[in-house]
Length: 207
Image (cartoon, rainbow, N blue to C red):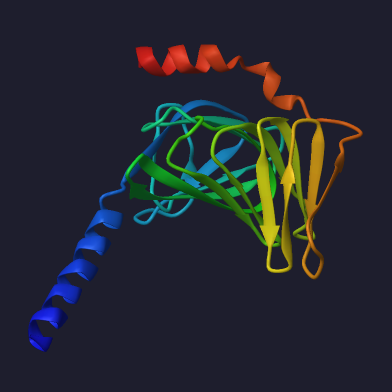
């Protein structure tokens, strides 16, 4: 009996690894402007271009005056990456699709996440922003401090010392050694408005 249990546990472990490995293509590059590069498991930094497929584990880095627009293939969640940013795109399959985990070291991103979707998290050096369906901006400065601006819905901002919910019109803040906080935003980023979300969605459908 013990041998059978060990065999079953081993098979479950292998199956779990295979399921995670099945997540390959995650997103599609809709637009690129300025200096943007991609690093994959098979290739060092190369120029990122419109039409590129983003796979699990790929890293995107943007230079001065750059802007990259992505759409995630499974649920059409949208992401825009601003200049001077670095983001790693990761994912794992679940019952609703592909749960997305973005590792962000520095820079700014805008996200519009599908309501009741498979899950979406942004990990930064000082916290994690977790959502189930909302629109928000995330900024990580050169000291690793995290700022989250709520546009629609709620964003959970957490670190090892606590958590806070960031609502529409609020700014969440997290840094190492302190609990996250949320206050009324004195300003809200609007740099993502240059490209209409509907236009990006239509462009993906026609590609």
